Length: 395
Image (cartoon, rainbow, N blue to C red):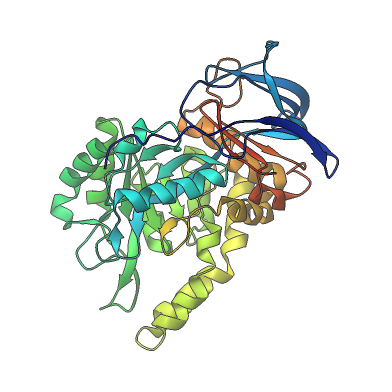
């Protein structure tokens, strides 16, 4: 499959109309990523500032200087920096790696939901070919998951024993874009419960090696023991984090260790517990307890100042394009402003990508309602602009 797809040129009539009290302009019936860029104008409330703003798009960049011949595509709207899914797996399904065609459809599903920046938290597929596609989200990769043999989902991870962890971290750091993903814990069938995969001193050495080569390390952690040990070992991020104790939360806040709880995926915990209960009743009870206390733990983390970001865990079990659901669930943790920032401007700052500022790349989403008043609207962007081009528009 070639690294770049050509898109057929289609007629692009421009028409403006009003419905539901909102006025906006359509550029054709089909989005055409190739060809000359159209200069765009939007007028609405810019988030997070909340200020009424006129914004123009020219040569793929944002400007607040008037462009006289721009086409007005949205007025009386709410404009946000492009959404960020900070825990996503493009190129992965329940069986493992997928081909380029399916990976492309996963990326399009995320894009059409307004996700324009993805931190891919582990994938067995090499998706670097997507970097050449102007019509697909930007992907920041973590290489492949690193786990021990028979201690994680089959066909997902680079499976090694502890003696090889440091070298494997270095290898996956080279395969990624500044991140490495460890599997911190998983069910130990001999123990009959969750257990850490890595001795703490080996984990510490591996994290130090990642830092030496310019990468940050994050880890899948469900239980209490793994998250405590990995935070102690100097890790940069925690995925899920359902086992955080008050002491661990305090340490994470002090060191600004990131947390991506993937709330939408945690809704699977009761089913996981039920399926595991016949053989592993202790594990099942543990998973139910972690599920029951998750909201309380995440609220404590938020109140303590732990940086929390939105992630869906799409790929594997979860479908792509569901970041709006995660935003709604995050609203239960810290309210609408917190949830939106976790999926947009704060996540962009954390990942080193600009928001909507003069000269920044024009990656933005537009809503018909104020998402601060109705988080549910985050599921339904009216307009998605990626690299200055309209890639999705809803009538």
